Image 1 (cartoon, helix red, strand yellow):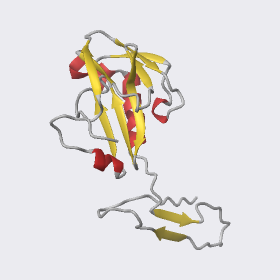
Image 2 (spheres, rainbow, N blue to C red):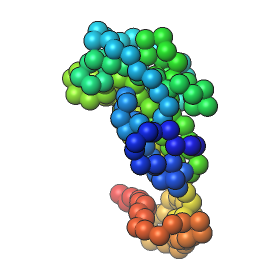
Image 3 (cartoon, rainbow, N blue to C red):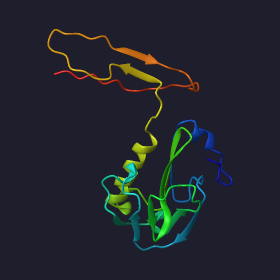
Amino acid sequence: GEYYGEGTDDISGWINSGKGFIQNGDWYNWFPNEWDGNSNELSIEIVDANHPITAGLPGIFTARGFWYGEYYGFVTSDEFSNIGRVEGNDRGITADKIGDGYAVYLGFHIFDDMGGDEALHLFSNALQYVTQSNSNWLSASPESGILSAGESVDVTVTFDATDLSGGDYSKDIVISSN
């Protein structure tokens, strides 16, 4: 992906390196977007019901605009996916894998009671989407198994730093027992 924001720091490399980014409305202006004024309830239509950020959402719902209900926005470049329409405009919701990272655009208010239950649910899904990891830098073998009382198994945990940048990394290995 290219850098689209004007007067802001370029975060394209950061997203491409495996980080997640959510743009709500016109700030932080990375996605190429336009906006329009509307202080009424907005019509949000899900176009791609199979995308992970739309899980559990109805096909159509209402929300308020960003900047406390005054505006709605949409991505203007068709290089990004069309997950949902806002007021009939394509790409009012978009979510894409950018390099090794993930970026989401939401063109309406997503916080507090002004956003509404569906907008909050969408934001929760978007957070999960942008924080997913597609990196295999840590693996365990076997990945799962069941043992009877008194049995044991060796688990090999492998850390592969190939293609990783410097920094701290964390991942969970969950072992449950009754």
